[in-house]
Amino acid sequence: MSDEKNRATAVAILPLVGGAANVTSVTHCMTRLRLGVADRSLVQDDALKALPAVLGVVEDDTYQIVLGPGTVARVTPEFAALVDAGRDASPAPETPPATPDPTTTVSTDSAPSPAEELAARGAALKARQKARNATPVKLFLRRIADIFVPLIPALIGCGIIAGLNGLLTNFGVLPALVPALAAIASGFMSLIAVFVGHNTAKEFGGTPVLGGAVAAIIVYAGVAQVSAFGQQLSPGQGGVLGALGAALLAVQVEKACRRYVPEALDVLVTPTVTVLVSGLVTLFGLMFLAGEVATAIGTCANWLLAHGGAAAGFLLGGLFLPLVMLGLHQALIPIHTTLIEQQGYTVLLPILAMAGAGQVGAALAVYVRLPGNRSIRRTVRSALPAGFLGVGEPLIYGVSLPLGRPFVTACVGGAFGGGFVGLFHQLGTTAGSTAIGPSGWALFPLLKGDRPLGATLAVYALGLLVGYAAGFLATYFFGFGKQALPDLNATTGPSVDGTQHLTRDGAGG
Image (cartoon, rainbow, N blue to C red; front, side, top):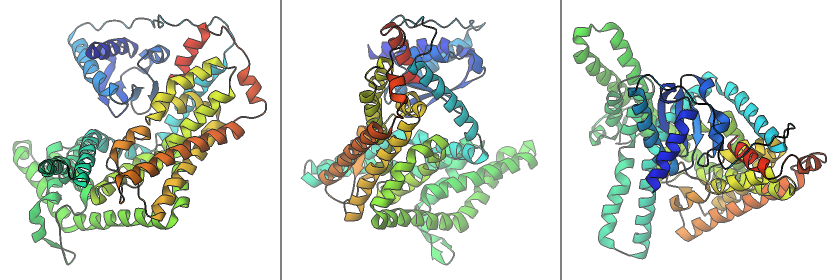
């Protein structure tokens, strides 16, 4: 039954993005189906947002349909199969006109309701943000993020197994199983540099296996026999940062070889020169330099929270939502991965996750303050479950950002939640995450720290509560101007018919 539901979702989405002929690429991340589309004008935004399974749409370098964690991983292969089948058929069918959801009807009132206005403002904000994000630096950061995003499922799976293994060890249960679970949890992390090298070469236009081959040098045990800068190298030195640099260099060497090596010799010369040159530079330069940078990142993160405590957490939690809006949060992915590789967990993610808690608290306050606006309230209700699980796009683009002030007060909530977690880090109770990707309640299975698990869970849970409360109170008292409340609470249009349509549109936008 679940498979039929996922296939039905894929079938419903395909014609609304212009059909198989209009889809140039199909991938997914933790929550979004990411599509390359040939002709943007063929995509029917409103009809997509009206689909029950769609939480929202985001337009960036790809067209992204928010389906939520778990669902997206099941819908994507069904959708990809439909696209492949559609490309084989010829000619490609004409795109049908948008069909309204049978459970909804569109308001006939010509005056736009507050939810309609919010959806329009949200769409305009997204369009402007997309234009701002098309800078060389942000495009580069997006490509770096695309290297690490495919690794997140393995990080999550191995992180949860590591946590389970820790519980078995602490309670002395099934001791014979502990070494096996340790091997399963640690195997991927011991070779993560190879996967990073492979994905880096693929992303930047090189041969993926050559990127992986050069990155594999970093984790090879025999590097302990090599000296660089007067020091013996150690296996894994430089970690993912070294792998990233080595693979980027390999791509450049490979492209240079393709330009100058005769075609008859290319199959022999190009791979050899690429691996040899990049490998030597990696051994006698990149591993040492990347190792120093990685060590500095770990030292800096720990020092910042050990000495900055609440102040550092306050700033990190409060600034994360604006970083997401600017596209700069992608620069943190290699930092998280480096910390996980070094320490077994990243101390930054639980603090940054407080931004989502502030967002949820702000949305709850919007719900309470607008009792007369049924459409916005239903938007909040439909988006809150995803918000509690750390999927923030429906609340951001459908509620807080278009309203303006609630986005700022959501940041305030995130700041207080981050400050709380940072304070406990300074007091000696660290809350870290063994993987990146999830946040909100979904982060609980991945929590780890330097104290018993119960203490770590308690700090994170209390931080979420502080974020919810601060976001709620800040929005309740300061989230609306004097004139905004009566305007937004005014009754507009048919209350039932209009509500259903506008709610879906607002939640998606």
